[in-house]
Length: 101
Image (tube, rainbow, N blue to C red):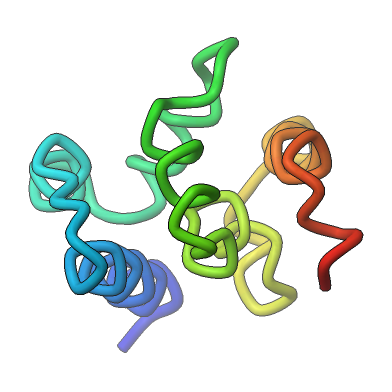
């Protein structure tokens, strides 16, 4: 399995973790199926404001399962630009993610 396919599997796991807590992110799942994990993450990070799903993940104490956290994992960083990595870090920082970790 190549790195991009592996990343898609990771994001599918994020969807399932949220679903197990009662949050069904239908639009996110549709994006994953249509674009794959890397393109889905790039599209979400390109929007100036974080998606509502990130706040829902925060509410459910699932930031570790967020797209932003997956993007920042050492293994997958090479799939993203510096600006995408910076945006992912900024969003998580605003939600206090790095203070908790």
